[in-house]
Length: 129
Picture 1 (cartoon, rainbow, N blue to C red):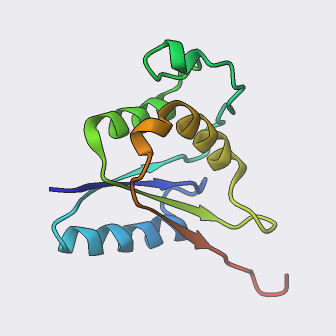
Picture 2: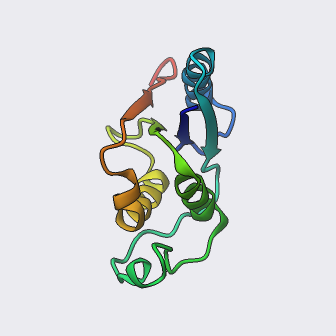
């Protein structure tokens, strides 16, 4: 059975991005694909400093935080695909998501190489803005 990791880059854990990712997960589940959604939430995320410690620590980032290790464990346990979801802020993804992905791609690039990936973006404009 295949497994796909979905990362919710929104600070709103049950907001529009989560709803969109849940629809993707539902469709994948209907096709027999196992899924896991990891949400960033409102926690601060340390960005990559390209120190190279992950290369000397068995592909583990030098920064010790639960969010990174949830993603690390999911990738190391074996995923077959990755879906990244983010709200659009001023024309780009959530900054915390970018910080997390820099660390994940730097330290786990070999494990993710050639795996299919997709993105889900959510844009919502309030009336009058």
